[in-house]
Amino acid sequence: QVQLVESGGGLVQPGESLTLSCVASGSSFNLFHLAWHRQAPGKEREFVASITSARITAYEDSVKGRFTISRDNARNTMYLQMNNLKSEDTAVYYCNAARTGGKPFWGQGTQVTVSS
Image 1 (cartoon, rainbow, N blue to C red):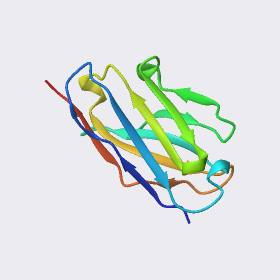
Image 2: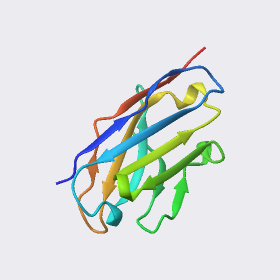
Image 3: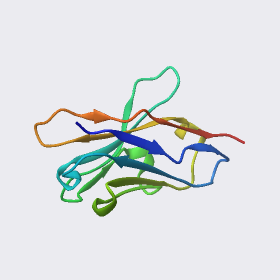
Image 4: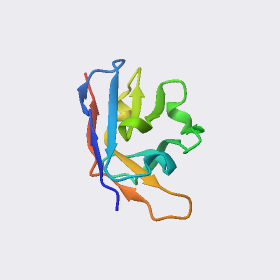
């Protein structure tokens, strides 16, 4: 069983930055493929970014060049550096972890609000 806890959300103005963190309990963190998803009010949850156990990254088109996903296996932590935030980035952000062929685990989410 893996527990994921997100933090770092908040209220920022357009153009500002935030860094989200996701800390995982349990062992073998380095073997997990990790991802960030988000869900805006009235919308379905959508993929934002991912990083595999081999540190291969992928991004949703609207965040490319603005968001950076990373991981620190020594700290069992994944990050999402978000720059030049826009109002459309407002959502609850969730982290996700899964081993190849395994069941996915989700965190409880952290709210990001971008508003002037």
